[in-house]
Image (cartoon, rainbow, N blue to C red; front, side, top):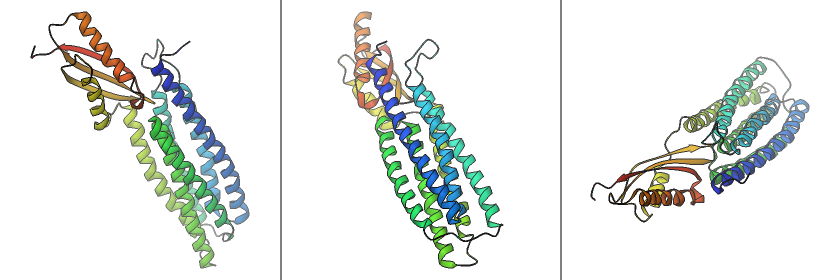
Length: 302
């Protein structure tokens, strides 16, 4: 089946985003193995907790990947506006996973603080430095991709990778203190892991708010609406605009707009103007508008 260009663009963005998420899954799998080995042989729970976090990241990223696969599907009889909400719902589930992960790491960190254990090895700092660099690089890359395609889920994944980098940075500081302090400071990396949970939970709140905004059809940013108004007003025959409502649906936006035209025009002419408004908005690929509903009203001044 040949998709309309508006839906085809959305599908391409979804598939490209899904491929980037898969690369993130591979990265997390490699880092999880490295951190687990470093934690076990280097005697540091902060690294073991970091490894467990990476394994949970793989599960949450799989949810995001599945969300993109569903979001790429075209509209059908049961979903006339498409399947874009799947992308936002997957972001919502990832935010929930982040809270669970923060609680799990905090519980184990407290247990380790209360349990005497051997101090960490110095070389675990090298492992963490490599992990932090890799995570920050991929977070920036994914964040840029999320802004380019307008994806909430990719933005949340980028914040997730950034949160992982902050967790590793906290562990780096804690292990450094434990090594520098010597005997009696063995729990410094555990305290660092506990502190990292606060960072994770704080970021989780931001992710949750962003995903809920999409699910609850929060209004698009004012500058987006202004651009939509400018495009519609530029169409010949449009005298003025009344209501303009824009909502996000996954990787695209839906627009409901009310235009005023000369009251003396025929129904056919009014319909042609409405169709021109729709074409002008959907043809603007940078705005990622997949569907437009245009209501025509007679201009009160005519």
